[in-house]
Length: 330
Image (tube, rainbow, N blue to C red; front, side):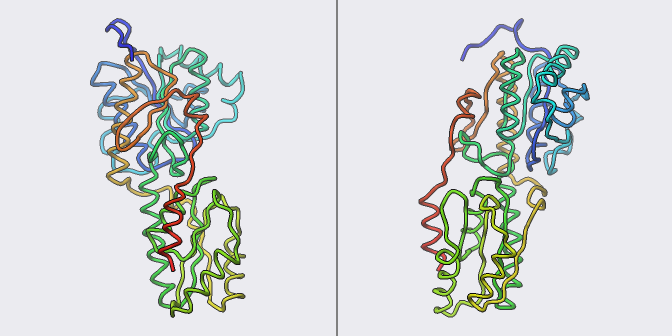
């Protein structure tokens, strides 16, 4: 990695959050701002992601701009998805904003869609560094994305509460969790909560085999209450599934869609620490005029990849973990 002289170090950068919010984004913003300020770099916060970059909605930030935000969920910079940014006209407006404010590099916190925007800006002369901020944990180059750990713990807590009432009424709770097209949240929360069955989009499933028969098998051991975890990427109506379970097993069943409560809450220590490390790392890259990169966490260490390489990688589910889940859930 080539280091540049002091004369070539960037003088002004920007930071934005894009796409779905994730707990820990504020910790990353804080790290970016404070690392920049500590190194004499002016830093702007872009309000509402790429929309803000198009409209010139920027605020100059300092050390106190990010005080007392490390513990907060969501993002103080707000977030949005921008269709206009996907057009050549919108992209040019964003570039014009960067030129107007003297912005030489941008830290983009978000998921793969946000990274595509960062890639496009980098190709047009604005070096960008992406930080993986998404609860879905679907960024292939990253073991744990910012927000994933917090979301996983939130799901676990809510399913634990559902278990209390399910046990009290000899009931089956069918729970839909987020994750978009990835099953990481469902798989790990299902294991953590002792689910009888876990349905994820990466593994073909059959309701009769993987839910009904498994429940009947455990009922023979005198088990009377059940948790079924379904990833939203399976595209199953969990209310219909609950009705089918009740009709075929005789067990009273209820469906719960956890929804956007999964996005909120105080970030866990793991998310705060990793987001801080990533934010600091991203600024150091830009300080040396290194852009078109994605910062990632691998085995608790921070590394970086070319954006093209990162976007072309495919993340596969841990089948060993999936098999363990089924062995211990009877």
